[in-house]
Length: 403
Image 1 (spheres, one colour):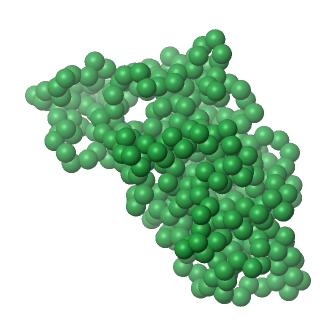
Image 2 (tube, one colour; image 1 turned 45 degrees about the vertical axis):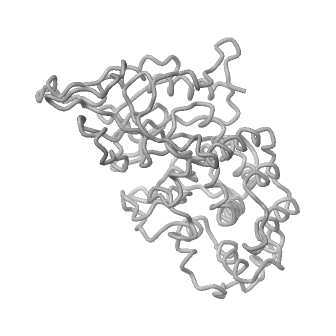
Image 3 (cartoon, helix red, strand yellow; image 1 turned 90 degrees about the vertical axis):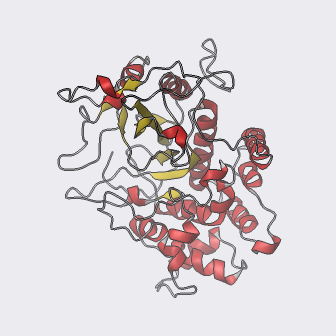
């Protein structure tokens, strides 16, 4: 699962994925009163804190709520199991409730009666072809929403895409990197406006090593092999500066070169990235004494959400991007690259066009509605999370999954 594997052909078998749901949990400070009107969901009171109890008071209600979800196993940092000794890589065979220090409260007076802790729920490894995964995501979202939680602009939903124990081929990763370099800013517009200019998901064109490489830098290719493969996938007549950037990707001789190129300058073994991009390739770099990692591409664009249909729709986009990179014929891939490579002043190729081209036409109405809501400022609030389920499309228990 965690050794960095580079197969020649990764077209067989379903993709796997995992999600990370970030949020804030409050604890009412001593002698402080609740906001009005009061939220009926339970909250821990600081007066009840027992210094002799090692349990995290911020987990008091959420962890039991997650344990009550049928069909999943749950761990926290006290019960975590690691894939290898002396590594920080957990076994992703269970859902996990852990701390997340990147999720922070704001400074408004609505925050002041409470102490806050950033939390994250990470999923078990899920399979793209498992019809049961939407129900698991929905049930977990429902369990978290039954507790007192809050979302703000520091919270996000991250989706890790992998290929089980088999890893990705070099060609697939070059294609994924190419797509994300071209479509990065346009895909970000599918998401809440708070994700733009957000330190937790900066554009690859701003923070990656590729963004700082010299344009037109020659790459060694004595046999002409990389030139030939690139020409099969990337039009030769796109504007020269862009072609020079993409050449850095297509002339990479291994996956770790691509991962370094698409990442910031943080050392691979560092636990904390200097910059967090919209897409993370660091999990493809082997690290630590055992030279292991989880072999996933991380999509970090989505704002904090506990709406299951929204999360599931974004999971489908991430899966479709990687599957398009895996399975599309050279001509189809090349056509998308051409459309996405027009000069900025004449480019009319948008995220919804891209979704159509990679086969996600059934999801286009959902994202079109999201875009309209952001443009008309109907969906820009990210403050205290309502506990009402009136706007949530929960799983129909008789159907067993979301449409």
